[in-house]
Image (cartoon, rainbow, N blue to C red):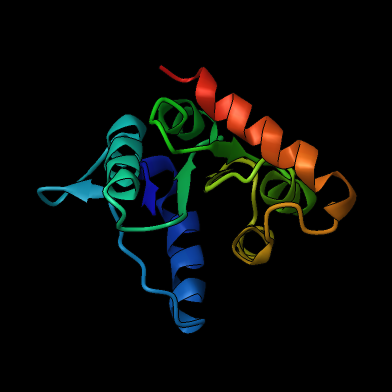
Length: 147
């Protein structure tokens, strides 16, 4: 996880829930004891993912959009900024997203926790088995677009 200073409280609420559920969480929200701007936190998280240190990540900023823009620049990172629990589920089921981006200005803590829960517990193509072949093919083609 990582959050910029504008979303630290939302990140803290979500991290507390993740730890209660037994998840191991690494927080990249600060560097040398100082809070990081969104572009530094997202970069640190995505580099860790590329190094195989985590299969998924959750990023937080004011709207989630800045984090998403940065994360999507990294090969192998598919970030989705979502504004509903349903979208958090479908970004996994349809797009196989591995980075969830949430905005402090948009989410309340309880709904954000639910969005994180469905993001972490939804399988790619879950509930969409009839179009599974298409979704797998589409994700491969999208990944191939990156240089």
